Length: 146
Image 1: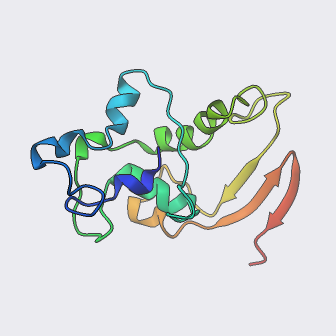
Image 2: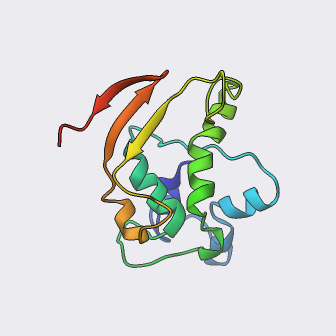
Image 3: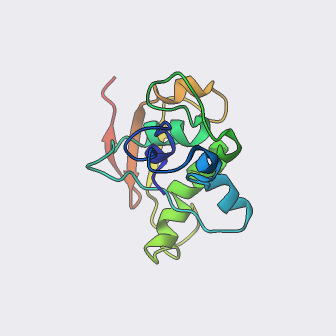
C-alpha cells in the first residue's frame, strides 16, 4: 500500500469513478490488517513523495490533500502499525525478512534516529519530523549537522 493514496479525497480523478456508496471500501488498510493481511508500505515514487513522514501522517490521519477533511476514518492506522508496515512489512514484501525489517541479532542494522518520538507527539508534528542520523548495516552514513 501507498499511504499517500489514503489521502486522496473523494471526487478526485482517482476516486470519482466509484459510486459514493462504495467510498467506505476505498483503500481498506486497517480492515485488511485486522483480517490478518501482511501489509507493506511504499511511496509510489515518483507519483508521490519519498518522504516517509508524509506517508506515515496520511496513514495515521487519513486527512486528505486539502488538509481539511478526513475520510474513511475506520481505516486509520496506528503509528505502530504504520511503522511496522514500513519496516517489517516492506522487508517481508521483498523476501528479505530474515535480513531486514526488525532489530534483531544477525540482521542488518538499518536505523534512522528521529528528532522526536512519533508515539508521543500530536499527529501534526509527524510532518515536521527530521532525521538526525541514519545507520546502514551498522555504520553511520548520515548525521544532521545541526
